[in-house]
Length: 249
Image 1 (tube, helix red, strand yellow):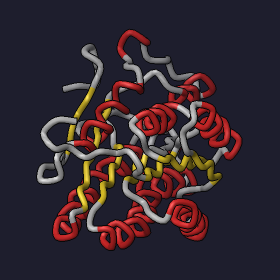
Image 2: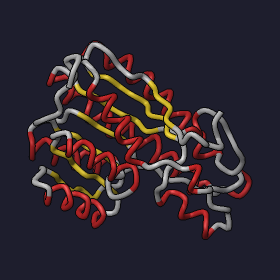
Image 3: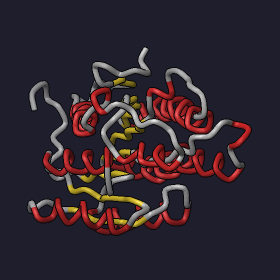
Image 4: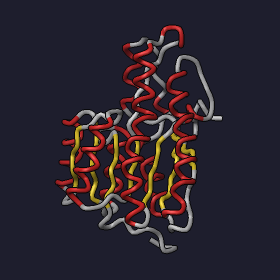
């Protein structure tokens, strides 16, 4: 690209939550940019499906079934990526869950699950990726937060806590990464047309109007843009919402 931006051809990206939604869209975007892509998802079949789609387009892809909150599983996943390609240039933490409940009705197990996937997971993977990128002389870690990290609404306290925490974690990680050429970007998307809202139906919560949601491919393109900026600059945080986003500002 122009401005001496980062050429992703021959680079390696690991994308979590790659079996569907934003993760799948991000895996496709990086694959089309010339990256080898490790598609990581707790749903191993979904990871294989997306990786198979990329491979069918003559791209390099590796499906990995992995629970991002499991320290041993994430260590095995990163080791598999390095064993396959010998490097890791980009980590995109997309995987996320939520339990939409009032605090008084939210179980401790549900709270722990949301924090484990949405905040512990990015920490575990960044902790593993950081020394690899440092040895290579640089890399990029992208953490996907949410507009839930900019304001609050009822019945989402665990999700808010995890996403606000992810913003803070990203800022601290970015400071640590600077001396090593490791950039950290927090992407804060508004509502997207994904399966994230499927749980609303079983909980009796009204679904959002699709006209107020955006295509996850747009957010994936934003992530790709941030990663391909010239290495002397960094997108620290970026908010991308549907024009009619109802939770912004």
